[in-house]
Length: 339
Image (tube, rainbow, N blue to C red; front, side, top):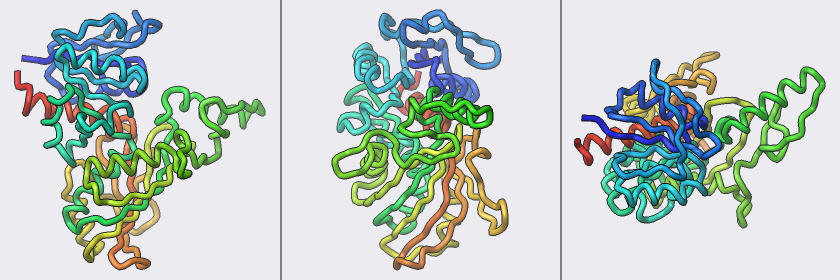
């Protein structure tokens, strides 16, 4: 017996990826409903190879009888409709930032803290973490088990798809404009993104950090271990899809490169590609469409007593959003809903 599943924000980048991932992984559905704002009603989106769904109006949709909702419509919209869906008995897996730090909402990465899914009964909502946090904690979990992590310093190189379709369009138009001498002023980003880097993602906070950097800190603590200190610098780069991170880890006890490599190689959701030769590492363009978090450039940090550094890349629309949400839904259906 299958589940009735609603995808909220079905016309967006993440919503479309959610529909594709549900189909690819053969999630047991009896019906799939595509929801979006009133202006998208009647548009068609694909589910699988041969099924086309007509978008329905989120504002008027009755969630009674819907088992699971995968939601990615933006934080302000989720603030209204995720509690409404939960009140109707639908379990919401919310991809926005709105509920992540709510103490009554579990923040889940299935490879890291699947046991937290059980807390969904408190609110009827499960939060999907920030894309940059997800790939980092998937990599950190086996290392924390190995040597107990004290401190993480991470620099991210995040693709424009993390800012939605508008971000991707802006990179495309600005890149094209360089070659045809048609300069385009930035709209989505604070400075030009084509052939450039922008050391700001989200708004600035009082301490000089950006909100994206704050998210990586507090979400890692909630998901993995509240005692881990995290210092992040988040940078937007002119890449369409795929987030990259350079991660430096300080352990409480000595951890060798060999032991770290073995632990990462055995970890669920992780693939290690680390050859000490030109091209012996994974770049963001190679991870597009892939489920795994890829780890390369594992090496000792000789500047601290117990330090390891490594390079980490992942498809931010898949593992960083849609795939993680579907994996949560799979665990929810298998272990808790059980039709």
